[in-house]
Each structure stands twice: as C-alpha cells, then as structure tokens.
Length: 110
Length: 113
Picture 1 (spheres, each protein chain N blue to C red):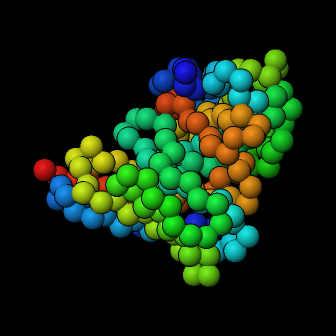
Picture 2 (picture 1 turned 120 degrees about the vertical axis):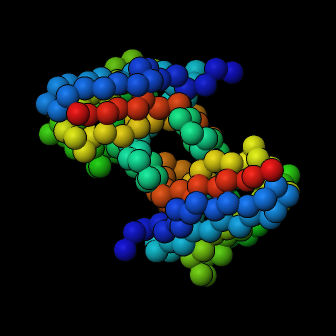
C-alpha cells in the first residue's frame, strides 16, 4: 500500500464548475499537508498549506484535512481554463521530507 | 526575487553514460532538496542538504547517484552510470531554515536511451 493515494484522473470539467480533488494516506503521524499545482514542463508550485486538521481558504481554493479519516481535499470554485494542470497532494511529518501523491490531471474546458 | 534555477533543462544520454545536473537555490535558502519525478508519479525525495551538510539521503541510490553542495549555495547531482530507469525529471527545491514552504525549480528532464 502506498503511503499516499491519489486518483490520477484525468478529470475534465466545464469552466465554472466546482472541482474536488482528494488524497488518502496511511501514516497517521503526518502533520503537514500541502497541495501543489504543476503545469506541463514546470516545477510544482505551492497552492495551499495546512498544519494538522481543519480547513483553509484562499480565494477560489479551499483545502480540508480530516485526520480521523486520513483524507485531504482541495476544492476549486469557479474553475477556469487556466486551472488546467496536474494537482499534487503532499504531506510530511515535518516540513522536510514531502511524500507526494501521483497527481491528478485536471482539464477545464471553456 | 529570482526563483530556483536549474540547468540543463533537457538531457539525452545513452545508458552507462554519466550526467550531471546543476541547481542554484533562491538566495538565502539554507535548505536544498533534490527530487526525482518519474512520468506519471509524484516527486520522490533523493537528498536533502542543510547548508553544505547532508540531512537525509536515505532514498538516494548511492551506487550510482551522488550529490554535493560544497559552499552551501548551489548544488550538483550526478548519475554514473545511468540506467534506463533513471529517465525522469530531476527537481531541485529550496527553503529557508524557518520557512515551511519548499520552492521548486523547473526541473531537468533526463532521457536515458
């Protein structure tokens, strides 16, 4: 069993849709949870960062962490074609050794 | 603020050849990471430096991979000899001592034939 599981997609949605991206994990000791966005042929860029449980909102993006279920989510409201990218969840015990999911490829069509 | 710089951006070599990648982190970032991202997978940490010292190299295949950060600034990652399964994107990331966010470079895309 992988430490972090993420559906690779692809996920195709129309512009304006609400997108839900999810990851599950097996290590209950993880404390730091991140979502990275990676455009084709680029490095990952941090979108959202959460310490321990709870929700965090930043503009159109909301990150949720449910440690009891070992489940994290990223919601994108009013999705735009520019949101088309691969979304990687990552988590760690501290802030160093990030364990990434495989990434979910998202396509938002006009 | 300039981002993490990496070169070359692309490299094609034949198996058993050697290759080296270079990374220049964001100025002032003491912590530097090398990740390997195989197609269709998430990045996997290979090695972490704090200044010029190695903090974690537990997932570095030390029989063929080596890395150094001699002056605590830029870093090189070397593969010798390369295998077909080393085909991947090699990402460099950095952060400050106190900051939690890792900033990634654009990566070097390696193809081993």
